[in-house]
Image 1: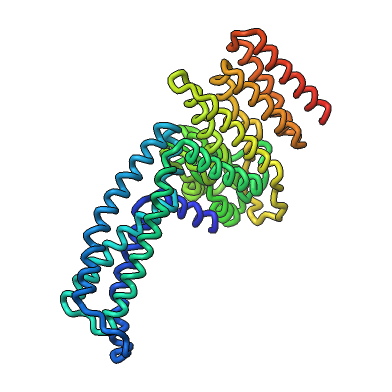
Image 2: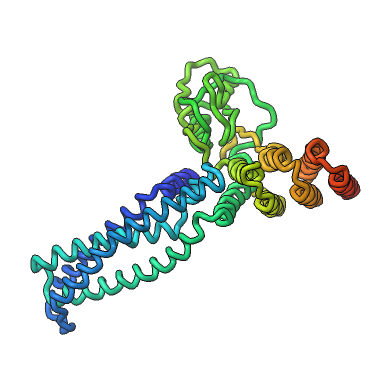
Amino acid sequence: MRDRIRFFLSRLGERLWVKPLFSCVLSIAAAFLARAADDTFPQSGLPDISADSLETLLSIISASMLVIAVFAVGSMLSAYASASGSATPRAFPVVVADDVSQYALSIFVGAFIFSIVGLIALMNGYYGSTGRFVLFVVTVTVFGIVIIGFVRWVDRIARLGRLGTTISKVEAVACRSLLRNRRCPTLGGRKLVHLGDGDPVYGESVGYLQRVDVEELQVFAEKHDLQVYVAVLPGEFIMPGQPVAHVGREGKSEELDFGCVSQAFLIGKTRTFEEDPRFGLIVLSEIASRALSPGINDPGTAVEIIDAFVRIFAQWSETEEQDVATERDRVWVPEVSVGDMFDNAFSAISRDGAGTIEVMLRLQSALASLSSLGDGELREAASRHGQFALKHAELALKLPEEVERVRQLAQREDSNTKHSS
């Protein structure tokens, strides 16, 4: 249930209307809070704030907040377009989920709604002396929040569309996803080594698998005393005729409705970051490939991406799998292999950066560093990609001296890897 709620909240975080809508509800409630103060403290002895001064203040806020909100939306859209153009369109969900920008937009829209509701109520004599004082305090508070939010937002919007900011955000999201997968590689089920025999279950649509509800599969398996073998993982593209799971009957012959099983596999048109640990690596790799294209020719960005991969896999290797007894003992789930993750991260850089000596040297050093982390599977994947990158460099680099530098570095690091193993 917790994973389901987290996935749902993550989808809401990518919608720009959610936080402004919540802010509007709070603004309307704050405007009517002043009326409740009139009923509770009719003779409070508080300073009597004139209706004219309140009307002027609320009119200023209502006239300025709508303009600022429109300006904020325009600036955010420009930043989103810049991030998508300079990095990759797949990074857009990460950029649009920026908390500071959504918070600022919510403040501007909420302040506008508050001022309109408060102004209408004030001009119709809805407030008494206590209510006007409370409305004044709330208005001043809203004004202060707007100023602070605007200053924070200006600082953030100046960086939001920058390539470095986009890389940092994607790296953070990819790292969280990989660490979550490291702690729970089988999504709470049992480890599947070989796909068991059983009745195939197909997805309800064609697209990318976004989430597997292992808890729902466990409920179905317990109810019918069966075993469920998950055949696909989040991030895979589900095609017609491709089974998403197999249900082991264990000799039972009764007819079963596998609708609950297929509904446990959430399929959408795009990939998501939360439960797809490889997607963040792919997005970072796409940013590096774009930077290495002849039209851009920015090897420094590719080097920055390689450094990000080193940080991500270093944290991944230091994180231990949670050794807990699973209650989902009837659901079998395969693990994401380290080789697949390295393929998603380094294959495109090895291909597109093969003709750039500084990228090849940094890539060999990064792979050697990762191979020394002590994990056998990780060491094997790093060594394989080091040789793969060397072959690309030998074909792409024009100067024999440059080829020899890469070859010497690859051979030296390969020998160190074999010595450490």
